[in-house]
Amino acid sequence: MKFAVVGAVAAALVGVVQPQCFTDNDDFRVKVNTDLTAITDFGFDLYRRLDSANSPQNFFFSPFSIWSAFIIAYLGSAGETEAQLKRALRVGSKVETFKIWRALDALYQTSNNAYTFNIVNRAYIDNVLPIRPCISEVLSNEIERVNFRDALNTVSRINNFASTNTKGKINNLVTAGDLQDVHMALVNAAYFKGTWQFQFKPTTTAPERFFVTPQRHQMVPMMSQVAAFRYGEFEQVAASVLELPYTGERVSMFLFLPAQEGPQGFANMVSRLSGNNLRAATHQRNLRKQDVDLKLPKFRMEMKLSDEMIPALMDMGIRDIFDSEKVDFTTLGNIRNLTLEKVIHKAFVEVNEEGTEAAAATVLAFATRASRKDIPVPFHCNRPFLFLIRDNETNNNLFMGVYRDPDTAGS
Image 1 (tube, rainbow, N blue to C red):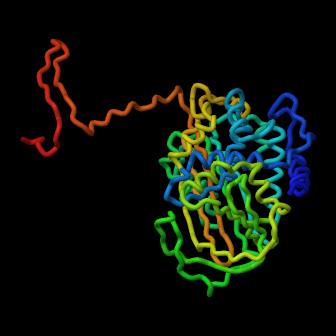
Image 2 (cartoon, rainbow, N blue to C red; image 1 turned 120 degrees about the horizontal axis):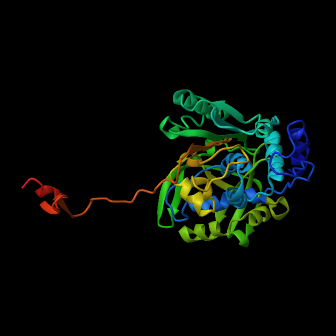
Image 3 (spheres, one colour; image 1 turned 90 degrees about the horizontal axis):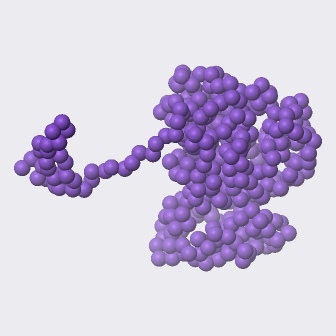
């Protein structure tokens, strides 16, 4: 992986970099960091804020898709907005980040007969926004100028981009309502399809019990096979780990089965997940190949994350980007008050006897605001309340009442 990333850096940067675009001392000759553990930590950090370990619901998302979309925002940011994104995304300087981001983009666009993984970014920017020429040049592959006042056309462009680049798995990513007052939308689309190196035989798939808790089970279509897999037990993640490789072995699904049954065992495992622990638990030197009797549910999931995204990101320290009085995108251009208003993420996965198909799309919708948006004060008359009809000139209460029970409202 490291050699592939390093090799992709040179190819990706030829002829696209204009000096002093991100800083006064841009030097694109610096060595790129090929350790992607920080991206993994970003993903686990975000996951723990989006999904409770005790939740009874399934969960699926693409942290890499979300991270990739935010990189464009990071490259265009400045001041404290830049500092907050840098910490949360676990990235280095803009120059270093740009290089690794470009290298990954080039790496995943390379054709591979064993599996398919594509990830594409697009920055839809309103024609009225002044973008610095060097940014337009450096991000020429991503920036697309649009007229956001033509909402239907812009919605169609974004949705077609997401659908095309996810092979039709992510449709209707945004609506016209999502783009109200929006002047910039940063969109990422990711798609994966791979076949198992050791496929399951459909004839062995049969209904079996899946224990939601030690006391409660449901019947699921359970795939099964006995084969030699890399396997290990790791105290640092409180789980047994099995590698299920796809054809070509460059991509694998790693299964983490908590050492302790029940919700507490799962929560204990989640709390220990980190980039370093994951690297140790998935390194081939630490996994021993042995015969395994494997049972894996056949499943399909679709998920949409929206309202929960902004609180999770703010909890990770990304705050100024949501505040019209503090947000700073001056690296992008002479832009004021371009505030992140909405984050939408859709994801799809299907696991069957043949392999896995997965897709995700992320959109960051930015609107310009003249001043800080006031947070509405909740005033919910969903319990008994008193009311007055008052003459303000004489300070005379003309009528007064108490509303306690809808059934007696007319009596």
